[in-house]
Amino acid sequence: MLGANRVRVHSEDGETRIARIPGKMQKRNWIREDDVVLIEPWDFQDEKADIKWRYKQWDVRWLREHGKLKV
Image 1 (cartoon, rainbow, N blue to C red):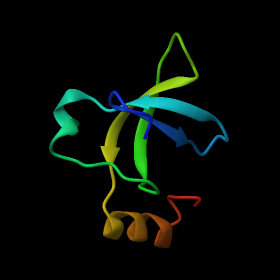
Image 2 (image 1 turned 60 degrees about the vertical axis):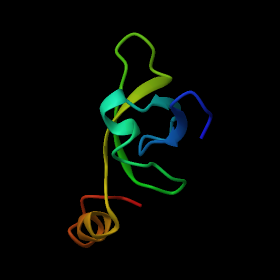
Image 3 (image 1 turned 90 degrees about the vertical axis):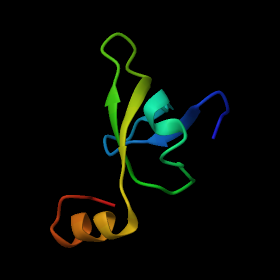
């Protein structure tokens, strides 16, 4: 957590990006350290991204069991 609704994320392609938590997720979905999130990199700045979804623990388990997640 970096403050001001921003977090540092490590993506599957090996990049570390600064991701923004959108307003609709700020109060409904609390994002913590070691959470798995879906991000969308910005077109004009590759080092920044938007968080689109936060996966729950059972979602992450299902993704790993079915080979959809490399972690």
